Length: 125
Image 1 (cartoon, rainbow, N blue to C red):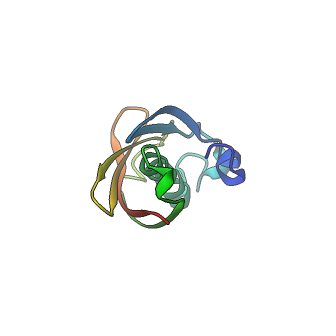
Image 2 (image 1 turned 90 degrees about the horizontal axis):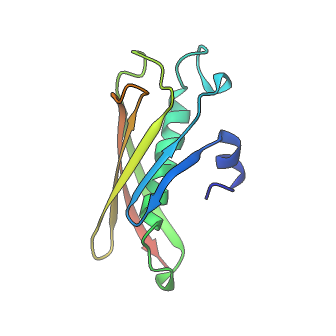
């Protein structure tokens, strides 16, 4: 995942990649901001989506297939309050029989939550 062209271009760094538990970081880049300080909402959503996807696939049995259907519902909180430097999405997973749910929380450099998202995945063939 970190080597896909888009993720590589964004500069996403995986700090932790364990079964059902992922932490990634996006080092600050002014060219990804609205005003030189605050990340564009699409950047935040992309990084959160990546954290959730990595967590969902982290413990998947690939014998069951490699196709996925998913939905992301994000709520960007206090985006304008302060800079998100660095952006730290952490994703945690709950697995059910056919569905996988990821919960992603993004924090700023002070540890304050700036965005929250939930994904629903159906992984397999």
